[in-house]
Image 1: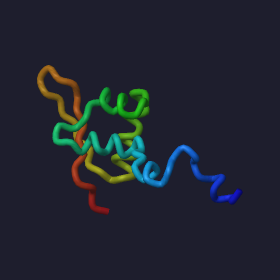
Image 2: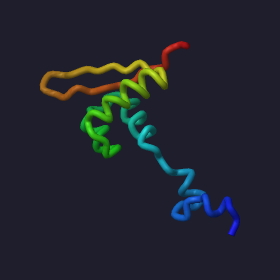
Image 3: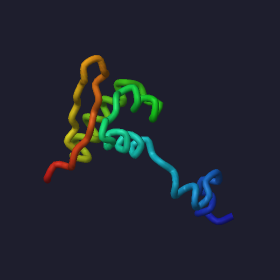
Length: 89
């Protein structure tokens, strides 16, 4: 057996590996929608707890990736988060 073959995930073929979507990509997709996303929607998409979602928003989305993260709350609705274009660096 080749060493490289042992390192590959046997469950994923070439096309499946290319189509794998990370939790980070899921959250960024939700935040990019015109209506944005609530904490509950992000928790459901990633199976993270609330504090993990908030930490991801502050640490990764804002600081590491440099997106402008905004939040809004409509009357009788939950707080929704949305990302805008990246900040200039």
